[in-house]
Length: 143
Image (cartoon, rainbow, N blue to C red):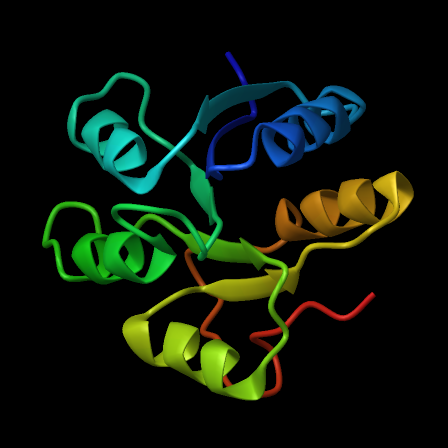
């Protein structure tokens, strides 16, 4: 059995590929499912298997953007307990606050270097998501 099932959505094919390469380099046994948009991710979440252990979510996508997806997931009785990690190029305080207020569990500004992308994913998988309660100090990943 896989240690983790990660769902990741991003409209940028290069970002999907880079994330896939980063996950494949990890020593943990991970089932990675990637989606090229918010609607596809939601369809997969609501039609398991598999069921995600954690969702990495880009914000800036056409159609259903990351805010829409986050709002829908966290507003759902059945799916609100799935940890959602925002994985975005943004580091704007207002965007970060909005994500925290909408119920995201964690916020990572997409690193530029592959080693930092790997490190940020690895770090996310060390968090006990059943007990972790984000606040303004613990919500944003710092390299």
